[in-house]
Image (cartoon, rainbow, N blue to C red; front, side, top):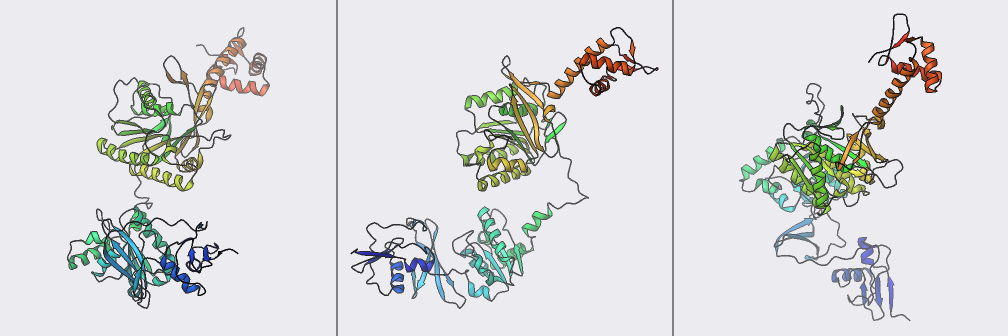
Length: 575
């Protein structure tokens, strides 16, 4: 007979940590252990309370304990500094049910259940509640802040306030009934987690509260305690009242963006064009997408060259930078030598012997994914300060700003951050990425590419056939450039760079013009003029086309090659 049996752990089932695993082991000696909480005396005491058939408390784990798949591995206990403050949490009846201890050196927090008047370092079996629950139950107006210290700060001003244990973004939406019909003031920490925390609390309470108002402490204060630090009671109350008089930050965000017919913004300046078609304006994203080795980096170099405003072959890109604003170019794919060649070739396109002071180009292939975006933000701040503004941003390898371009949870926020930077710095951000390899319909890479396509002002596509690359708009709000009218370029071995060639449409027009001149020469070889019917017959004979096509050719010849005389006959124009 086996010397042990396994069954569900009643303490684990009670707190919901695992409802299916048979991970309580009971030995024939009467000893027992929970595989999930080996050595946890408080957990074992609760097992004894729920299983009266068990013997003495013995936390010896099974020799080969298994952790249930549904339960995460317990983290190693961290070393905590000395306790500097204890915050008591009470139920609605005023009974103390748990405490949050604040530690120092280093700063940290721990939570402790109160059992028989004694604090124990566990929260098993405890239903969490908002801080100062008895006080907020009786109040009409409640401030919700981020941390017990901030609650005490506001209480010194005569304000009822609350928070939750665990820090930002740990609000329990099941507490909403405690705040039904109350006026709520939200004041989170002055950072991104604090703003997300306020968003979370607002979403939970707006359906039930009488009103919900946000207040934001002014920088550089991190929270309400820092904002009121050093003030007398009278001054602190006045400062809180001033915060309440400030418009709700969300109101300010909306009001600044509200349409007003009487206040039109200045016309959007064209930062980049292809011919006469504007492809990039401030506050927008632009995408350059292509298969590998189609000439994306050459086109990025043409953007740099065009920004100089100097004459040269810029592959159809038109720009200028008379104000000397910073052009920030980052490349996450090239080696140091290749990066230098790309930028040097861009300047050689316009015969620039000296690098413009505003051209700030960086290679970021050897830094981490996280660092790349941090460096981009940092560079935009200092470049604007150095040059009075940002002309444009060129990101050659935008997919390298995320770890996985197929992860929508990572890619969508990155596109949002890039768009925000474009608006913040009043510029355009040109993003270069690849089409999916083997994509039949030239689909951009992953969720990142799809979201960039949706959010971009212009999506430029590059297609390379027989060594010739054509640039056209795949999707665009303003600039609609058809493939046959798109700028074209190809590699020129003599100059060591890509050079422009005629568009397919211009090339066809030139070819048609050549054939039409030869046709006129032959048709009018022995006659000074021809009736329309005779001219049409001659064109059908010479070009071997049908009647309708011959009529189209005649229309193309007039008035460039032919004209009608007073008698209605067609005669050729002399050169």
